[in-house]
Amino acid sequence: MDRVIEKKKWSSKKLVTIGGVFALVALLAGSYYFTQGASRLNVDPARITISEITKGVFQENIPVNGIVLPVTTIYLDATEGGRVEEKYVEDGAMMTKGQPILRLSNTDLELSLSNQETQVFNVLTQMQISKNNADQNTITRLNQMAEVDNALKEAERLYRVNERLFNQKAIGKQEYQSSKNLYEYQVRRKALTVDILNKDSVSNRQQLSQMQQSFERMQNALQLMRKKVGDLIVRAPVDGQLTSLDAEIGQSKNKGERLGQLDVMSGYKVRVDIDEHYISRIFTGLRGTFTFAGKEYALVIKKIYTQVTGGRFQVDMEFEKDVPQGIRRGQTLQIRLALSDEKQAILLPKGGFYQQTGGNWVYKLNGAGTMAYKVNVQLGMQSPDTYEVLEGLQPGDKVITSSYENFGDNQELILK
Image 1 (tube, rainbow, N blue to C red):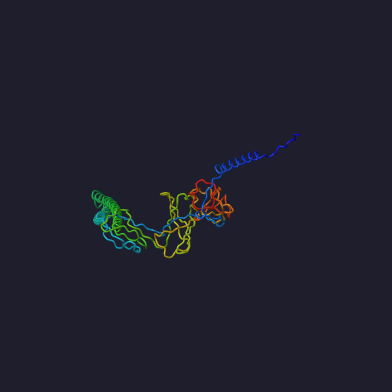
Image 2: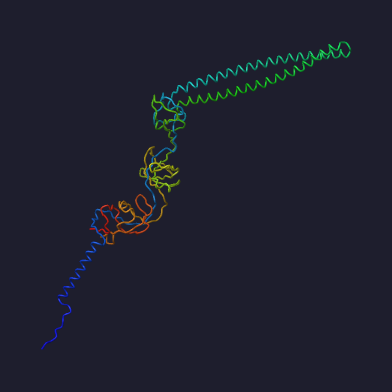
């Protein structure tokens, strides 16, 4: 008798087929993962630098170099050109005000002085001659005046006598009229003589005044010429130290040429070079610090030179309180110039990673420290040692801060 045989649901052939399908799917998934998923690179932890993100006090500052200079420097220029004849001191000497430094010679200037002195002497001589002539002319006029006065008195006396006699019919009209005419003539003559004398007096005074003014002008010109000749001896304008003296005996110096400089030793300042990138953020009053002989000192910006040369501009900083003992002119200081106030911030230590990422992303470690993966970050201000983290990291996170040059474009790093 035939009987129905149940068909098995999971035959060996079917199981093999299903297993083959799963294996194929797994193979395809694995292939996709390893070819299309996140790229990985094995990295030796001993060859990288791992830093922890912290939170603390942050102040943006930049490192700059400054050169120590005297607070006041006076430049010595040749007021008059000439040949260096004699040097009284050498470079580096301590000078007192008025002390001679060197002597120049200028024959043209000295000849001009001699000619000016001769002209002044000639004017003085001519002035004396004119004064003598004026005095003589005045004496002559006064003598004439005396004669006129005497003649007028005599004519008046004779006229008065003849007038009485004529009234008494003692003399004729002709004699009387003659004495009257003579008297009137002497009156007019005296008036004319007085007028001439007054005009001569005014003319003499004007002439002498003009000559005196001319003489004074020439005297002033002579004094200026003597000063110019005196400037051939270059003297220290103030007390200080002579530096950068550039003059040798026999050397010719042009008018206005730099001879050296005098440093007033009342204090020091620091001339600092800063990248033009920061020019809009630099203003007077900003502070900086530096370390000298194991002690920290503070500086403050007092003057800004806005002219940019070679991509840099300069500022003058002065010591805020104490000046370091033993500091010297020309010494270079490494200064930390603060661009912001202190504040609390999340801090990322500086490292070589910035060269490849520009601060846009970093490799952050997982909790176990076995793998690092890319995360986007946003960095703010910086100090010489740290960056301010604005987004992407939290205190306690660990990131790779050494160079990423050998990591290529891998998304993940396997640390083993």
